[in-house]
Amino acid sequence: MTAIRLWPGLFLVATALAAWLRKHRQRTAVTSSREVLGRIMLGMFLSLPPLAVHPHLSMAQNPRSATAQNRKVPATYSAWQEVSFDSHMFLQLHPGWYHLKNSNIYFVIYPDMTAMSRGLDRVACFIEKSETKGTIVLRSEIKVNTFFGHDYSVEDIAKFFNKVKKERREFDLSNEERDLKEHLLKTKLLKLDRLGKYHGQERAALLGFTKADQYPSDVSPRPMHIYIHEIFHGLWFTTDYRHDIAVYWNRIPAQEKKIIIDILYQRAQYDPNDLPLIQREFASYFRDYEGQEILASSEAQQLAISQLEEYQRELRNIEQPYIKALTEVLQNQLLRVE
Image (tube, rainbow, N blue to C red; front, side):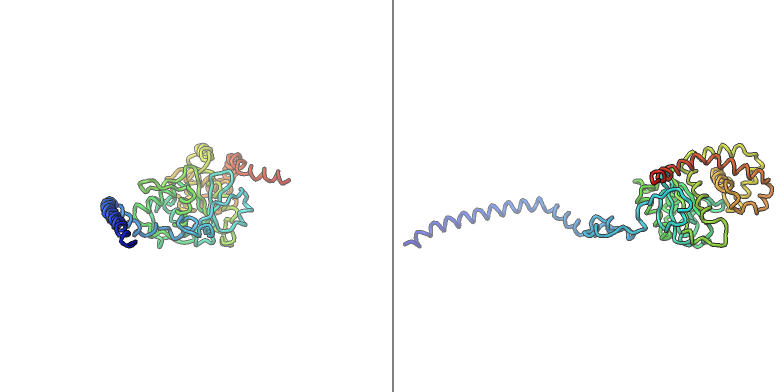
């Protein structure tokens, strides 16, 4: 009797369930037709490989890394280390990337002469040398250990990498050249626009040295002199020091200028037609001529010692306010310590 009474109830439940299933199938069909494109796009996206990460970048620079916070950035890509203008301090510095306090002067110290040559010699040929200016020479054509120091505006370095890119020769960059480009990009001194062109920060200088104890012991100038020489080039690129030197250069008689240009060309094949380059090298070499080899050249003998002394005296007078600005930070620190 009880079983007979359950049948009508079960029948009603089954009927309701069947109606619900029919309705659900219709809704699912409609939903599927709307989602089909989205599901295809999602599948395509999930099938893509991960974003490419440059092999030199640390895991901390890869947002997909779950262990990013547990890895240190490689020393090659550490931030600029700030140092004061102190030539004695330079002798103690280890290879790395440095920023001179109170200036827009940056410099790289390489572990040895060969590494510095691989990093900056082709830049020198592109920017300064009369025979190769504006061209990207082959690495096989570079005579290593030719330069004791380097100095360039970051804008000129951008031109070098733009030329490399235009000629599709990025594959030929040395590891040191790649490191230089990546570090300048990472620290925003070098920027890449939407068209793929590099732009260097205005009035910023990059200098290059090797570790002080890696310079040849039997040659002149000494590491301290090289450091000071290049720092003045840095001032040239970043301050009005360049304008003051140009004013002084214009006061020098034409015949003396010709002798000076010949001396500089014989010394390092500086482009005689690049007036800013000539003025820059004149300021750095002749301010400290006693420590240089220029007096040994036949051309230099045509300049009287009194003239050389006058150059040194005038150049050192011009540089004083700029050196003072560099050393103010160091002097203030010493005063606070005392």
